[in-house]
Image (tube, rainbow, N blue to C red; front, side, top):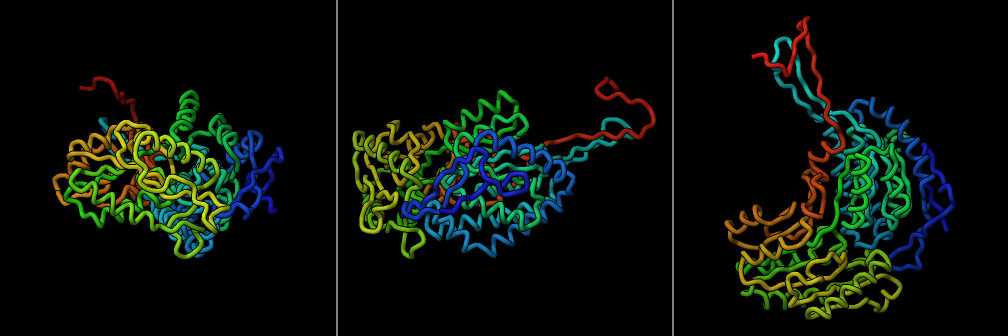
Length: 492
């Protein structure tokens, strides 16, 4: 079995304590990818010391030149797209069509970041005093600790890492423990593209490594994607230590299908939104809110199509739905299926998939519950699996109320032909993202991504806003009057 390394101090090195985590293919756990470091505080301390040196070098590199490195990263990702998609599917399970999209999102983010290296705008404004110049500009902050999940092994590290680098920060990346191979390849590409070695540190491991990064006094800012409960702990530490923090956490996203909807279009949307990535997206459609007039017809259409979805190895042609990422994920879905069976009606699925060819993987049948009550546990709590809850409503107002009545606020969608309802939805649905006549998944790299309420803390990934998170504003005044001028004094 191959043993892989951390990247710390400009070199590939083993973990200090010598502990490792075995990485296996979730479609067939007999397929072992290798052993990856189970890092701890000692590894993080070494990474921080190196990142401090890297930051001093990188911050002095002009931002357009930093962008040029990211442009080369985009070119290398493009050249290796199929290879990276294949290793990513082997590592976390989603079909190749999805992992190709994951790589493409990294490519898009790289090219977008490259252009932002020439657009880190400040402001020049008139001073209230004569012969005085006033301006603001952005500068890097320091070391950025990035803690990323398993479900987008390339896209999310690039969402966070590329803007952080273009802004001039050094980066310590702690990827999800289920997807270390993808992160390793990403770091190899960054180095090949010309990133100075001590600007990037890769620290593999589980919660202990992540906690050490969050708590280290010399890590200046943290970007975390994961569960709301873990995010709360991260927030407590960062608040106590006065660190800049971006949290991207849970979701309980709803698709609303109204009586005037194009049902065939809505059907394609719900199949993709609910069962794409095996339901393992923070934007996955886990609630289907359907108006009375089309409820029965639409649920029948959905059950018939969902039953035909093909489960299997995502690297094999014809696979619609891959495995869950690990055994714990399967157990969690099992627990919620048991809760649903006690609360409502099981329409489809509800058990592990163990047919021939699936018995050695973490497969779960696409599952649909109907007669789900608003405020029930199944309707309120994030499951992160292929489980869809169907809620019947009488009208648009009730649909909007049900959508908003959860602690999360990431994504929502509405299927309707009524332009007035569409614009009401954009304004009234309490989510960071709302789609009209499209599923709850499908964010684009050049727009801000994030949610409200317990989904996040107000910052956004992607788009132009993320560059504000990874840089700080400095104001400069130049007084060329040759005499003392007093601002903030009553000069009138």
